Length: 288
Image 1 (cartoon, rainbow, N blue to C red):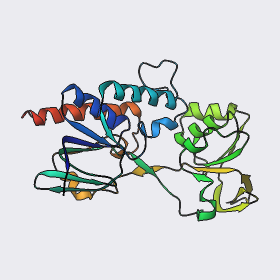
Image 2 (image 1 turned 90 degrees about the vertical axis):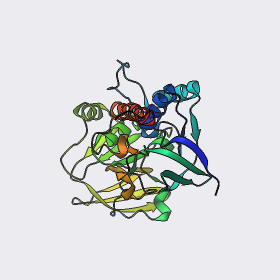
Image 3 (image 1 turned 30 degrees about the vertical axis):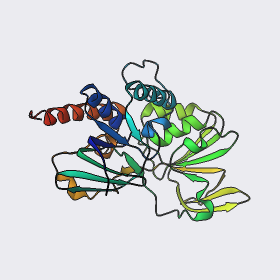
Image 4 (image 1 turned 135 degrees about the vertical axis):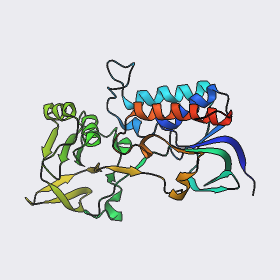
């Protein structure tokens, strides 16, 4: 079996993976990034990034991702748009099988981010699935629609603030507790286009005349909407690798895939940079 060889393979081109690749490029270390979708990861969904140094007025996720793309192009970082399917470790090398190629590296960096938590209830069957989303990108530009969002964390509120500019948005919170930043909740309350319901659990989704009908408890309310966004949390995405490999010295997990509740662009970027510095030390025979 033929392999494409490199010193380092990074899986994921979000802020963590890109920051790692940028620092490795400064060391002139041969690196390949494998990315299944697009550069930037989930940051492209952000309505406004306000806590990243250097942007005193904040920056939208889309503009921030464009800056990352420009940075990647400037340094000519090698990105393969492929989906990692299996990662193994054989005879001192990592073997990465994707949907297109086979790669081999001495060091691997897992920066694959997270995947959405899919609720068991309500059941999302095939005939409504095309109107149910877990990220904002596919409906970011819709206008004059009604959109329900299940969730009360930062993502749910951030999505609401993005979509409410041109649409009516309904936030459905399963409890009274609001997990979002207070500033996001305050902004949502100030918007005429955002409605908020607490203690509202959606138990059934059906389709009626090209709309979604969401039935909730305990007050048995019915919400008729065009689209439904589910933002109840995310979990690490490493379905392509056996967790037993995590103990190997030359495997690194960085960014959201490894940071549990501390998922911030600045933290992910720092992870990438410090990991690249450790890799450089290893390849040059120095301590971590």
